[in-house]
Structures are given as C-alpha cells and as structure tokens.
Length: 147
Ligand SMILES: Nc1nc2c(c(=O)[nH]1)N=C([C@H](O)[C@H](O)COP(=O)(O)OP(=O)(O)OP(=O)(O)O)CN2
Ligand SMILES: [Zn+2]
Image (tube, rainbow, N blue to C red; front, side):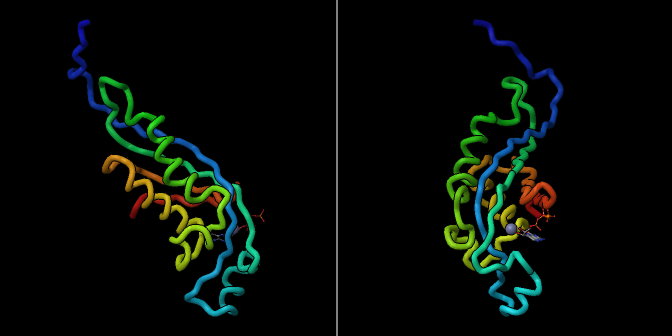
C-alpha cells in the first residue's frame, strides 16, 4: 500500500492534558517547626489524626504534533504513566505514612505537585512534561512547571 508523504506539512506544537482523581489523607506538620509553631501555621490542618481530600490532578504535556500520527503522544501511554506515578503510590494512601517521600517533606499541595512532576519525568520521554495542576479542593489549586 502507498504511504503518503507528510513532510511538507507545517510543524505544530500541541498541549494535551489528562485528568486523574485520587483520594488520600494527610496532616500538615513540619519537622522543622515546633509543635506550637505547627499549630499556629497549619491550624486545623495540623490535627494529629489528619483529614482527607479527593484530589484532582491535570497532567499536561507539550510537544510537536507528529505529522504521521497526529499526536503529541498517545494518551493511552500517558494514562499508563499516570497509573504508575500517581495512582499506585498515592490513591487511598496516608501521604505522610505510606509515601516515603513525605516522611520528611510536608504534604502540602505544592509538594504533592513536585512529587508528581518528579515521578512522571522519570517515566515520560524527555522534555515532554509541561505542567502539573493539583486541585486539593475545588478552591485550592496548585500549578507546578518544574522550575
Ligand atoms: N499553601 C498551602 N496552604 C494550605 C494547604 C496547601 O496544601 N498549601 N493545605 C491546606 C489543608 O490541607 C486544608 O485541607 C485545606 O482545606 P480547607 O481550608 O478546608 O479547604 P477550602 O479552602 O477549600 O475549604 P472551605 O472551608 O470550604 O473554604 C491548608 N493550607
Ligand atoms: Zn489537607
């Protein structure tokens, strides 16, 4: 069968996003602060027994739209990377106790976004990951771009 030449088509850059939700509990507590300071800084979120969230994460990759496949990357592959980097380590977990990364790192949404960024960059082809957006609640949203 004849294969079309598509090299004459202009090069385009695209952004694709996949959304994933997961549930986890945590407590905001810094080992770099005294108990009194922790209470003052984190308030109700420092409650020793923790609290839970239904997190939503938007993973965006940026890259050339392949002229032959029409894709920046296959979303089915991205889904698999998200399963490995987000769902397996974080879903239905106590972030502070079940995820070694948060043993000494405060489980804020900022640090959660950094953790997800670092985990995904280990799996994705180089220079594709563009942005991680984490919704801790409908009102509390963090964006991280690897800076
Ligand atoms: N910079 C950050 N500040 C706070 C974070 C964070 O991750 N980064 N996290 C929290 C708490 O985890 C807390 O769970 C937030 O909950 P809450 O204030 O109840 O959430 P809402 O603002 O959406 O709730 P409403 O009471 O309905 O406004 C705190 N700070
Ligand atoms: Zn919280």
